[in-house]
View (cartoon, rainbow, N blue to C red):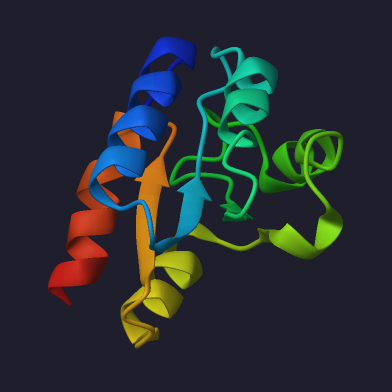
Length: 121
């Protein structure tokens, strides 16, 4: 989930403990009511990661991928951030065969059902 600033910090610590040598790709969707700027700033601490910013699965409830992208440009080089639809991001992750890469879907529990549905198909 990593749906708020403390949870993002905990996620980063945990991921670095269990996957220190993996290349990380964060697929990010954040609810509009959350402090997305702080969440993105903390995610950006993973300096070697790639960030895929999405509009979540319900446009009226999530910060747009465009807005997340514009915010993330303040913290990360543009060559490490991308905008995609959630479904496309998950499908691309499933097709990626790089064994040294780990994909993490973060920012909201509300996307869980959609992500699991895509994976199941």
